[in-house]
Image 1 (cartoon, rainbow over the protein chains, first blue to last red):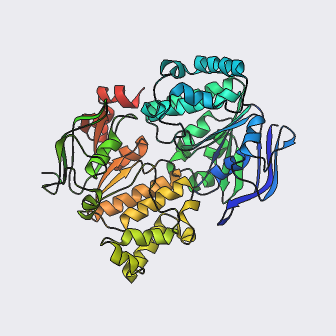
Image 2: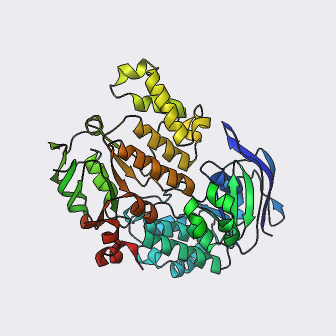
Image 3: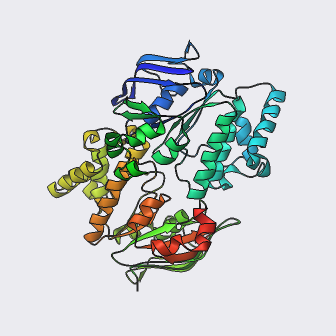
Length: 240
Length: 243
């Protein structure tokens, strides 16, 4: 077991979005959270990464309590998040953007070593190193965001709707890359509205509704559950 | 002549040619799809049509009237509404207040009179109900999730009752069940006479909804036809759909 959230309550000015959430993410898994708009999927990621303090409940990562820590402290535990919308700095180069992923490290030799490793996994970081990040297409920017998140050599990667805005070819490439990051030994927790693609790469699916977990299961168990598939996954998916 | 006619439009940003003699026609009463790889110029074309970017050359006509390089508010008043890939709503106003702002078409005076007509209030509530935001009507829009903001923006555009609606990735970030409902609502509005131009990567959504699809690649239109024609076009497969 790597990450456990227990009875978590968290929200914004308007009240709690998470209302007693329990969630476990096993080591080495690709866990995918799906659910209706406003169910609290992105909020779960924000609570884990420290962007939002839970009001109640526990967040435990590798037997250490991380609930309420600052984002920087969470990073030092080996947890990184790739946000929902474009998050690269458009006016600086691809390489500079990737190096910023290691901003908490002060060992230059280590940063350079990591950069080399990341370049091997993501050729685009080397090929387009000096180009302004804003000149890359949406899919290329997503790959650079992935590359950047690996600079801290994380054990847990949080991805918020990685499919968003991607054309079909790029979508496949991005999800192949998620599998690739997983194969290098990382645990991945992702949130997806593209249910078929998201659950397709996952080892475990989690259905959320109104701030709670409603169902946990394998890809087949979730898509095969008629009620869930009708309510959240689009009627047509049940036959997929 | 089509309701919306884009002819040989070009647009460069510095050294990057975003659109190169791009043409597109949207027939009155149609649901037309616009697809193409990331970076092929779809959003730039939307921006050109709606006045958010000035085009370098070419013409854009709406109802046989030139709208080339006129201001966004002028385009909107002619009856062309649009949504954005990254939503544009008023974050500090509540969901319902956002709807009221959207219902005002005649400037500040109306806006300051504060309460719209009962018809508009009713319509606002109906639209919020459709997109499933009724419970959140008194919540500041900033507190909505990304998907909910997109739904609010859709309702926001509908209340102004435009003749043509340009949708930029309406299904992105939206739950699949709601995507099906969204498609239903678009069909219903279409039957009532609203014309749609839809940019979307969700192929099931586009192919199921649109009677005609234009495909863009590297700033130009490369193909056009029914969903079946487009799907079997080798140039489209190569540029967009992959294997």
